[in-house]
Image (cartoon, rainbow, N blue to C red; front, side, top):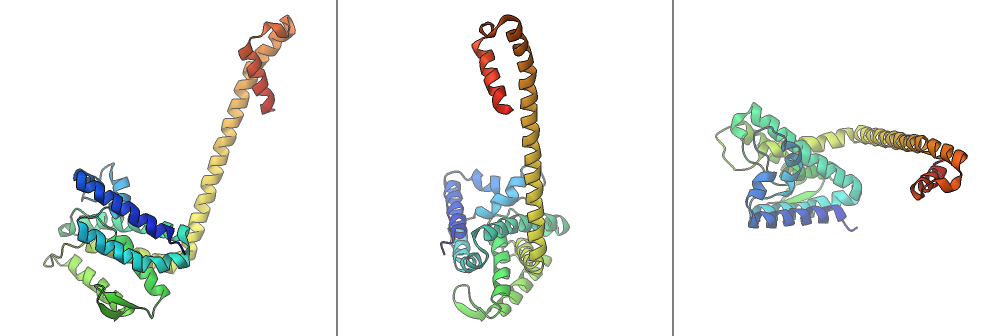
Length: 252
C-alpha cells in the first residue's frame, strides 16, 4: 500500500510548519482561537495541519505514521482522507463549543491531535487486541491505553487545576468522532452518498439551465439574421453573423 493520504497529510503539515518559521503570523492565522468570526470556517480545518514547535510536529507525525497507515490500508485512501478531514473539523467544532461552556479551556489550538485521537479510536475498534507503545516506549494493551487516555482528557478538561498545555477538549472531540464513525459508519456512508448525488443532480440542472439559456440567446440572435438573409441574400451578413449561425447549428 502506498498510504497516499498519510504521506500527503505529513507533507502538508511539514510545509505549513516551515512556513510558520519564516512568518510567525501564519500559525496564528490558522489556529483555533476562542472566538467566532468569518475566518473560523477555514481555521477549523487548517489548524489540524499547523503545529507549535518541532517536538509537537514530530510527535504528531510519528503517531500519524504508525497509527494511521494501517487504518488507511483497511479503509482505502479516499475513505481514510474523508474520515481524517471530518475528524479535524469535528474536533475543532467541539473545541470551540467547549471553550464557551468551560471558559478555562479557552486557548489557541493547533495540531493534528484531534484527528489522531479519532483515528486511534477507529484503530482500537478495528484491532481490539493490539498493543501500543505508550510514549513510544511502554508496551500496553490498546484497550487499557484508550480508557486511560480518555479518562485523563476528561479530568484535565473539567478541572482547572490541571495545566498540561494539551488541547483535551480537542482530543475528546476526536474520540467522539471516531466513535460516531464506528457506530454509524453505514449511515454516514449513506448520508454522504445521498449528499453527493444531490450535488451531482444540482450541477446537472444548472448545466442544463445554462445550455438552454445559451440556446435561447442564440435563437434570438439567429432569427434576425435569417430574416436579413431572406430579404437581402447570404452576402448581406457579416462574418460575425455567419459565426453565430454556425454555432447555432451546433446547438440543434
